[in-house]
Length: 208
Image 1 (cartoon, one colour):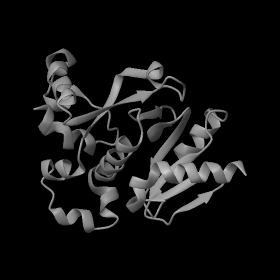
Image 2 (cartoon, one colour):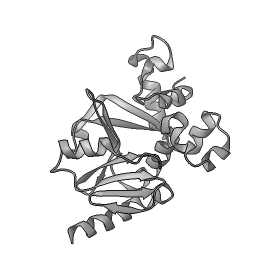
Image 3 (cartoon, one colour):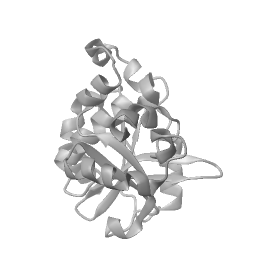
Image 4 (cartoon, one colour):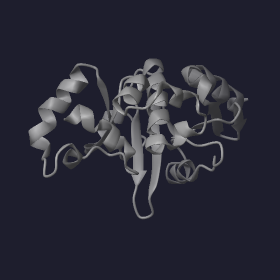
């Protein structure tokens, strides 16, 4: 039941995993073991909410808040019963499941490049959300995924305002071209598997 609920979980504006989406009235203790089995079997990624960009990242995990993504975006497409042509329809990648396909794709590439599992960050009143936080060496970098039509990164800006000393570079994935604007590195989606290398080049350039 958890497995089948994942598309519904990711279709929500707030993608935080909620057991009641699995089954009306469900409680965590009823499904915690089943969810952990999916994690241990490496079928899903469990991404915790981080309260701050500190080291070690696990010390800042909010263990009550997490998102569940599939290990492969193709599995999400299949589970959601989307046709394979969905991957070739440009901006629709950003709108299906409120961007869940794109987030799952980006996460899939990040996990293969960075040793520490990414986190995410949110704030309420007013609401802000950074899609992922990645640790590169001893730096914590915020990552946001935006559509081509709207690349304004309100949450990245807010994150920098709250944690100015910890944020050396902000990363944005979109359909725009590769570019570095001050401390914001825009990476086109098709180059997501080059994220680590591109971040390294951007940080070197900023240090000159």
